[in-house]
Image (cartoon, rainbow, N blue to C red; front, side, top):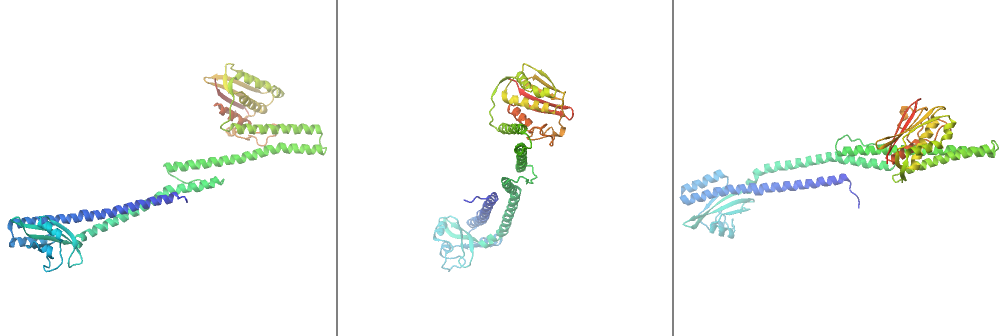
Amino acid sequence: MRMQSIKKKVWLAVISILVVVIAAAIWLISFLYDELYIEKQIELLMNEGQYLAHYYNQHGVHEAFFERLKWSEENSGSDVTFSDDPMQLGSGSPFEPFSQENLITFEERQLLLDGETVVMIRSHPHFAQDILGVAFPLFEDEHLSGSILLSLPLAEVYEPFVHIRAILILSVLSVVVVIIIIARKIIQHTVDPISEMKRISMRMAEGDFSERIKVKRNDELGQLADSFNRLSMALEKVEDNRRAFLANVSHELRTPLSYMKGYAEAMEEGVIESKKGLSMIRSESQRLERLVNDLLDLAQLEGESYPLQCEPIAFAQLIYDVTESLDLPISNKQLKLVTELDESSIIEADRDRIEQVIRNVLDNAIRYTPKKKQILLKLKVEGEWSVLTITDEGIGIPKEHLQAVTERFYRVHQARSRINGGSGLGLAIVSEIVKKHGGKFELLSEKGKGTSVMIMLRNL
């Protein structure tokens, strides 16, 4: 079954409303004519006829009565017919007494004989038009002595209503036009932006995130368009990051592989000694292994379901263990390592991951701190938090790079040597691990004066 568009559904709803409005207008016109206007004419004829019948009962048949009939006919606008023969209305038209056609039916004649008033709407016996008539019985000594018929051609009754009907029809047409204009505006204002969202979403599904919805409004649809644009920008950023990530991964993998291939070829051709070549190949393979491990770690940490093996940890002791394992690179650069650790700090965390955090931060501090400088490790308990601060006297990070150094493969100095630089994943891993533990990670630095890394983890 073919799915209907929102625009088509809206137009169907509008057409349905128009049908209801037109039907209601037709019913209203019919009601005004049949129930109100004609009823009003009948009421006027009834009042006039009752007055004439009462006048007849008081004065009988004489010249004053006929003058009253003539006056009533001239002033009411109706035809007034008096018959002193009760049978005349039933046997023929009072307009032509010898006519063989009946103006009223036998049943209506019987109603007159019973003293009841008869209201009729039917064709005139001799004129091609309908008439509205009201017949009143006249009594003398409780016997039917005659009848009065007041009649109006329906054309005359209908004629004043023609102007009213024209006004009503014009009003209905105006309402229809207004509804169509409003519906068109609503569709342009509401449905068109949704259609635009659909078009752009299809472009997004094809990988194009560059388009934006141009909607300037403060209602829910404007908020939806704004959210849609933010989603598009976020997806565009994700796509850019993905491409940059793939480019960086390719570059990082290609470099050690190229070195390994080059040394292998040099060894085959006898350009370098086998021992030196194997040593370089082993170094590059270790670098490649670290990169792959870092990528796997980061991919796992960025997942929502990464399991942490949390346990109570003496934070100070863990820091001592890590610094002890780094004695060799620290002594090689003749660095002074100062520790101020609060032994009372106990945290619940994944030991391996927190060790990785400390090791990555210290590795950066050792790498970028010049010889014979100092690295300070300070651990203190502040309320529910254990705060570890690692401060070095290294080269520092320019202020404009501080917000980006935790991104994957981000390097402050893009052209630094392979010996001095890592993979660009260390701080990204640190940030994700701390985040997984519900902690806080802050980085303060000033170019040429060193860097301070603050890690906050909750106490047990």
